[in-house]
Length: 118
Image (cartoon, rainbow, N blue to C red; front, side):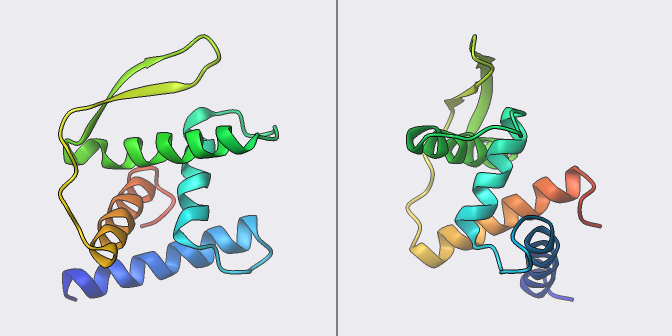
């Protein structure tokens, strides 16, 4: 199976699995899955978040999934328990579709590493 076909297959499997668990089967989009990763990384699962906190959760998720690519490195956890990352390298200038592929690839790898996908 080609790399693109494997990514597509794994992404679809992940969307099905997370959608069944978190949205009564309605397909989650990329942003929703990024948000879920942020909540997981923060570890404060059973609470409501304000709008600015939701954006911060998405930032945490993006940093976490792109960390293995060398773009970010974990820095510290603040007194409220929020992880902070430092930027190591600027992301390349990518078209929207290319950004989407990079994020899907990084998210699939995150869930493979966490044994959610096989």
